[in-house]
Image 1: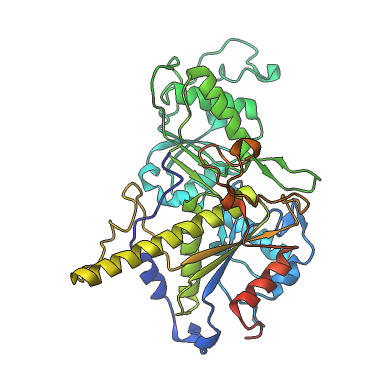
Image 2: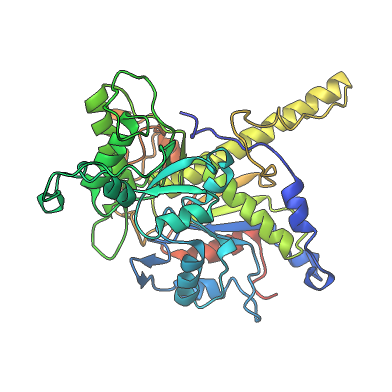
Length: 432
């Protein structure tokens, strides 16, 4: 599975273009007060529960803006939601938090799909709810088919709900191109319909006029956004998330074929890919504000051990390993006297095609709040040798469970306490 360890190929031209947008008026007059850190905020369970704002969230964000309403540190909202466009989410957050938030500060679970250019011209089937066709086209996809479009073209396929079955026998209305890839944006409304038609597409190679082929060891490329098993709304207990839908799809596919369903990529937290993209957005913000100090530290604030904390710690480990690797290469060059620099290809994973520059961050610290999925009365795993068989792991099956990765760097009551802690740790002045 290639999604877990994705490292992005370097191309510093994008950041250079962002830096070229700076104007003399936007440059910071006092570099002493320039932030060297960026903040990554989860939304559900940290800022809101369903549509209800969490107390003190607005107060926390008033600490993050100056008298002109501009953020004094780069901030990105990293959510595993994927049922709306970024602008709509930015508008919602602006209303809830009482500060102006742009869509460039919002990262949906599907945002990294912008980098999957090799699929942008292919016919893709999309599953989820909300304006899925608009979302896909906004990300760069040009040929998009929805589940409802499949139902209309092949009316005999959706048979679970007796009320939706054709009243009279009807033949397929084949007017759609062959599906070449499947994208799972998020949990759909009618699970039985989506599970049936996605399985049909995978087992017919994208041509629903064909019969099932269960003997093949491969299937169409499948890309999934948001692997959350559960998420926190207004209810007392967490609700099913897209990860639960994926569990159903995976087990149905295996039950029919005897083979594992495989993903081309998994996006959303805790994927390294998501945090790498978020780090890029942080750097872009800093460049647009004219802040010249490198952003070396990230702080990820979340409420879910299995996604927010796991993902932040996983990315932190990647950053540490990358830094150690570069230091080792520098020492080797000094000893050999070659002075040769590491090529961009050698510093990245050759399986990944992207246009993101290498991260400037060297750490990603996790902060857990007690206002969402996390239950403060639940004992955290302190023993990294704890037997996996005795632990309920809510993460996706393709993410290896490591108890150390769900250990938060800090635990605080809410997002306001998290912001205060970060400013204290960074010795960052609150009045600029």
